Length: 97
Image (cartoon, rainbow, N blue to C red; front, top):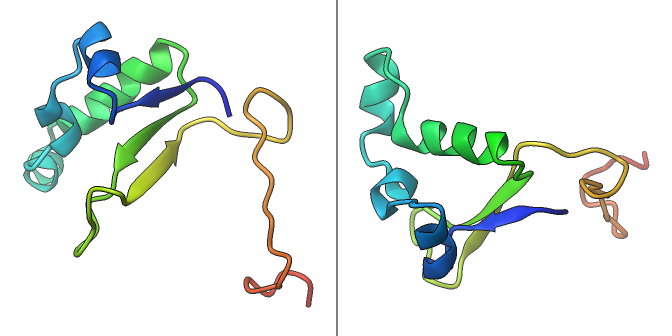
């Protein structure tokens, strides 16, 4: 998957003037229900326009720690550079049934 913006890298954030508040976006729910575009969505739109296929970002799930990371994808497919392949060798998803 390429290119991916690394929101965990302070120098990458600085290079594109990405503020932590855009990533954290604590008001996203209120913004959405008020008809406004949340800062995190505006950031995603800006990164897509800059050619990024996704973003590496810390997890905001309850109980998540500093080492918990998500990969958010905006563009993917079955060809490089945005190829994504599902690997489920143990059939945990039940797709081989």
